[in-house]
Amino acid sequence: MATTTDRPPIVAVRLEVTTQSRPFRAVYVGEHECAHHLVPFLANALHAASPEATITTTEIRSGRDWTDPIAELADESADLTALVAPHHLARHRTPSSLDLPLRVHQLVDTSTPWPQVEQRITRRERTAIRRGVEAHGYTVEIDHDGTLLNHFYDRLYHPTMSSRHGTSARTATRTEAFRLFTDGGILLTLHSAGTFVAGALCHRTPDGVLHGRLIGLLEGDDEWRRRGAMSVLYREVLRWATENDAPHVDLSGGEPFLSKGTFQFKRKFGATTTIPRTWLGARTTTLTPKRDSPLMRRFLIDNPPIAHNDDNSLSARYYFDHTTPPRLDLSDNCEGLTTRHLTDLDNFPWDRT
Image 1 (cartoon, helix red, strand yellow):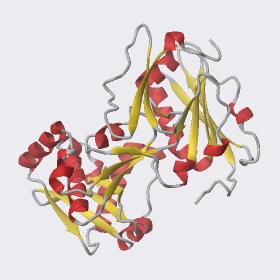
Image 2 (cartoon, one colour):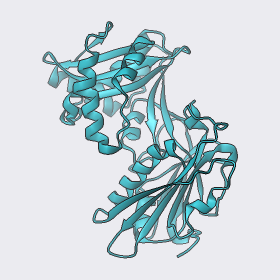
Image 3 (cartoon, rainbow, N blue to C red):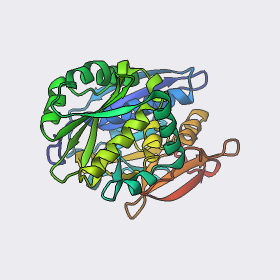
């Protein structure tokens, strides 16, 4: 596992976006491991902002480490830069820059009785869960001896990762899955009419926190999500934690943007947005929009970031301009986000126009 003293090599990843207007370039600079988390998000978000665009990714291994300056690797011609570094080395800011956590996690307090935990789930989600159970007869079972673990890995987890993430999927190996199970893990299985349709492999750490590690739907079929299977499964994970003295459930997390579907989904379960207590949590992403363009504006408006405030608390940052209002439909209504900032791109301090 990387630490700030390991001095891991730095890579630069360039995303060339070819549109009908002028070319657009986004550049990531940081550790190779961190690139696996952030670069696919940037590529997907830019493609969503300009569906007709062609995106070409080029990785440059610099051979440098954190003892060397890295700003020059960011490419002065870039429209957007994301520089990832340990907190104490994060720099190269301009007036347009934001400091983001590399990742955020979503933590649910399960230290109180179950009725109180359940009430923190949004009313709309509780209603959807009830209707899903009534329509599909969902029942949950706990696999205590691992008899369903291979089935879960082959038929649920692996297909789900492939369907969601394609070639960028960061899939745990079967060996890793079994190690998690044997070292304080539990496998919750959800069934409909006798069919195993959804499952979650969770791992309990020595501090008692239950971490949601691997999750999957039967054959990766998103129809089960639309039928409410994932919502029922998450509720049952929280119920198990409450009834088995786990003080918190870490639902894992993702990149620090309100547009992440997983963020919005987990927010509904009363989750608090936090910084992960791993080496990933010790990294800062300095995000700098450099040049004004329609694609840049679309990216910023459609992907409100979660940023550090000066006191290191977290805030939601919404952008808008004279033609497009802020995406307040991407809710920041969750514990852990202490403030909301709205920025007018018509009066933004662009480095270049």
